[in-house]
Length: 291
Image: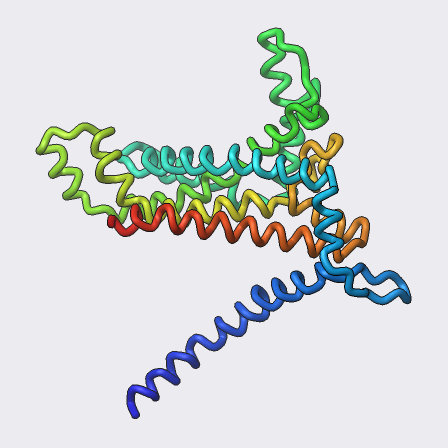
């Protein structure tokens, strides 16, 4: 009787989280998948079942493939650099140095800045002729450049903004993980004559793998959910050179009011995130659990 009572209490404790997860995650995902097989209702015209027509239209859409390609490049540009910088910054501020509290705050500040403030700051940096970047490059005789107006540089400019904002956020997790590592390990390694790089490669980094898995999953999700910076800085231009998948979903849903096609794109986004997340768990599981 006590065992069943404990089971009931356990499920009751989980019930609020289960209800919230089902209501705001699973149910919307199922409804979105269902709506992707229907046409968009317009006025008095009701939605009707059209099967895979939305998916066929998506595969024939050149903008979709360009946006997907942009998003893959954006992910490749932001994920490894943000994580690498986060580890370096965490190692730096974890050491004994003067003013490390101020340094930690400086690294973390971009994370808590409002999105509009971040966009305005970097739009000032990228302003042709008057921006900070052109002012600095002009000292070396380099011609001014429209960073956000050039299709060849606009995506790279967005990537820089994302790295600047995310690296400090990931640093906090690595700093907490570093502070949980027993200092006796470093002392024992020093007695054995191990150098700093060897100790980091053989001891510190393996112990950071659980944090790396958590950070990497969040980095992948962040790389496919960016819409605010694109909306404020470029609106996907020029010529869709900076448009990402979630922004394209936003355009179709709220600008063109094609909600069924937006649902189809959302299904693709969910599948991509699921594949990346499952792949990360399968690849890093042994490294995390030291098997």
